[in-house]
Length: 288
Image 1 (cartoon, rainbow, N blue to C red):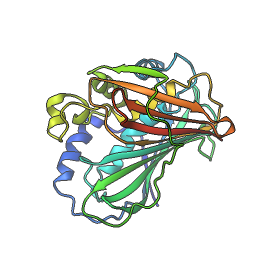
Image 2 (image 1 turned 135 degrees about the vertical axis):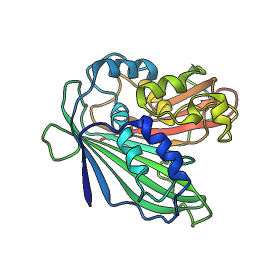
Image 3 (image 1 turned 90 degrees about the vertical axis):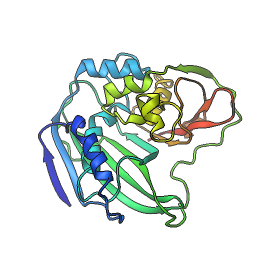
Image 4 (image 1 turned 120 degrees about the vertical axis):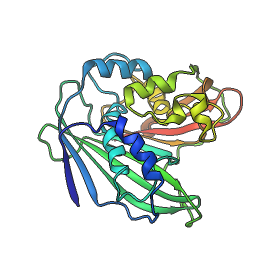
């Protein structure tokens, strides 16, 4: 594997135009690059952490939400997926699942190393799926204490069966929400400010329509973070939170959140359309 050391976070302002240009020249194939990006000496800006918490519904704390390191690694993920040897165009990619394992809480003030690589291109009945793996190693430790596996779908032809789904949470009853949340029209722009994810489908109705959506849609990782925030104060120090993204949340929206505790097995949860039995997200939280 080729390891590339980064001295700073990639500039997402320049990467999105690169993604557009790359989408015009990809030649196909499904051979993922054997490259790992590494960035050392990463620390968290307390103001940025507070801004992220406000957007996603977390309380102010020196303990990082389990979804927060995803935004620290996001620029490295995009940089990797816009390299010339990456086989798929970034625009039009579908984020279908995300699994985060936290082996212990990360805290404000820790110095971290971030690692990002791709793994396991595999056939799906709508194209090809693959994983982008991000890891956090605190201090001089050799083993990650936080791992994020983002599963993407590149649509294109039929390359076989998708097999068993990565996320198979407990089946939930028809929507009887334990909470209802009003999702404002600007949540895509607000989350873009704290995450760096300025994909046009999340920002404005007009730019979303260019990609087939009648309005802007919420970021999948915002919906995951908002659901995780609903469990604050009840989670162990080590757990895995695993979600599948089902239907986009068209903005503005009212959504229903359903969850229950399954004892030692953890929790199951879903985010629903408020007026019909359509899940936006399904997930589980499993103690480690």
